[in-house]
Image (cartoon, rainbow over all chains, first blue to last red; front, side, top):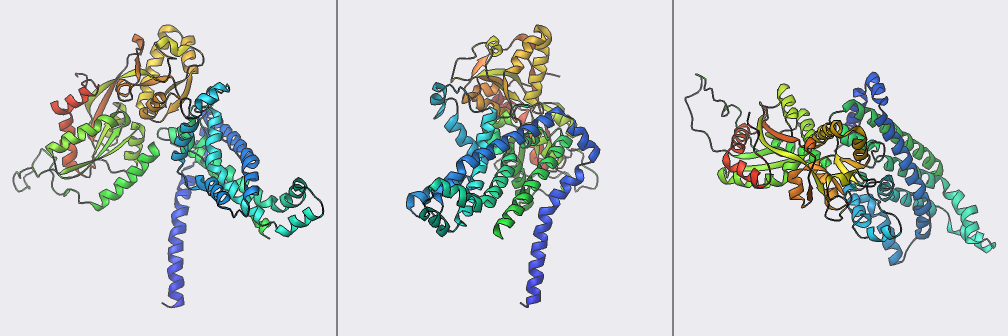
Length: 262
Length: 279
């Protein structure tokens, strides 16, 4: 095959794929007639779903920052069998179907499941079917994105800088604060943005574990799923908002990560 | 989950594309034989796939119905897509290949028939709205318990037929007992589910204490049947119709006819469904 024919083949296949990705998004935006979009935006149920999604995804991201960042720090450059095993475990939800994640959450935290009786003794009567369940579903599904990005960011920090800091008498906490975090900051931020974008779009685990009640547990993706059959305009309005939010988070993450790579 | 049903629909579309479907030039479903036809041919043996789009609440009994129908027509392989009827309607509107729709209400198939997507619907059976309570606790033992603060109830979303029956029942009951009572009940709702099976499952595992589902779901999920006040007695009339563009029209028509016959009606009755109301 000549180079030219080979290039032509590549361009054809790539073009078909790009078209396949672009067409559904274009169809969505074409259907979003501005007047009907604005009318749908006037619905209280739409706004409560937007608000709930923004809040839960942000709380999820903060929890990922608090939990997945230290995990990534401790497991950076892990070589031992146990540490590698834990790393795989923490990244496993990346490939876990969300419905499986939701089922697993119910079986762990359900009122009459594994931890339910213990939680009840601690005064937590109900976890499933509450707004907290949304955050838990999002954290399980989206947290690994930050964990993975944070590990990559920490691995970029040269070990000799940490060693130098220790030699100069700095404690580990000081080294993390003054050396590791500043150098890893952009990678961490990119990971958090991706986690936020994934969290705000979470559906499968949320529906199973948190249910859907307007104003309480009905997130944007749930509202699209539960209500699109008879409220297509509303679903399209929500879909456009979700698309723009996710796009914004992704572009920001790319920009931050791009700067980090430089 | 209905996400799964979307996949099923997509899968079905693929399967149907590959399998041989009955020759569309043979008008086997038409009772009118035009003069151009080469005389009355013997009805060909039914074969091929039969794509059944069925309301979630029919999911359990459908297995029995299918195997009985297959005994009569061994050449047919039924494939079921069970979900909230509102999803099935959207799928059919979007061009998903379906042979038969079995709906948990009358209005959805009627609307599809008006759009020319379904044949004229006929009654299949009827069901009753019921309150099922979990066996994991004794929070709800009678209907009044459902009004107590802190009780956790589930019902179906307003697009789902079961959700519409629940709305109807609640509205009638509210006008009898007063809006404040109804507000107490509505305030205890923790989730509006996408289909009645999802609601019944959340009751069965005890994440909800009780909820509005069908009597047949109370039976299949082994729940406790909490008697509803008289004002809340709502009859759910299930209807069925063959799709206008059914990939397998002969089988679709035969299945719909068979479903109104004594064998199918007996299976439905054994599962707790009532015969369709006499018209």
